[in-house]
Each structure stands twice: as C-alpha cells, then as structure tokens.
Length: 122
Image (tube, rainbow, N blue to C red; front, side, top):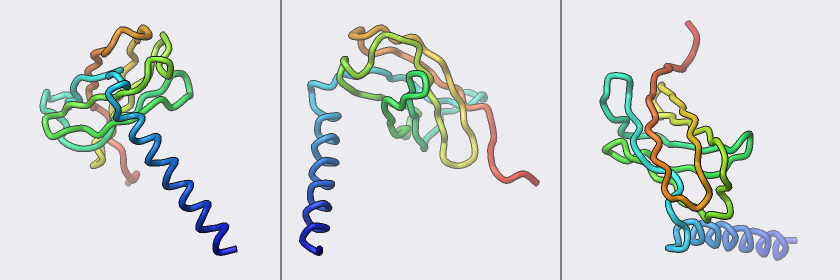
C-alpha cells in the first residue's frame, strides 16, 4: 500500500512539473498581458490575475511589483472568444474586465482596474 501511494505521489509530482514546464516553454506564447491598477491610478503590487472563457478556467498569473501581469499558453488552449479577467490584490480589493481575444493574435492587451473592496461584513 505504501508503494502504491508512493508511486501515485511521484506521478502527481511529475505531472505538475510537466504542465508547469509546458506552460513556461517558448512554445507557449503570451495570450494576455498589461497592468493591474487601482481606481486612483496606482499599480497593484501583489496578488494574481485569473482568466476564464465562459466558466472555464484558462490560466493565472502573479501581479508583478509594477502592476504588470502576463498569461501564457498554447494558442490551441485560447480559442477566439470573450474572456473574463479577474484580479485580486490579495489584501482586500478585486477588479475585473472582459476582453475579446482572437486566437493566435498574441498578446491581447487588457488593463484591469481594481475597484471593489471585499472582506468581513461589519
């Protein structure tokens, strides 16, 4: 039983490494990039951006120290359509934007403005 668990764990790690390397490979062009800013114009310096096509998760990226983000992926995984990008600064604010992305025309530039606070209700 321990060997079976060990093999499954090893295969899981290998799969994660494979998909991470595939996503970062030079064959994976930028699909979306630009900046995440607050309504004041200041850049968000932390958090993440997630991208969805309909309700299907397509990718994520960390927000860099200048507010920039970039999401890479194979063109086949990003067909033509209207994508929903969701930004969360990780400290209490979110924002989103809808962007049209034609397959193979890389990258699509899509700024996101963070305007909505979240957290516990008083």
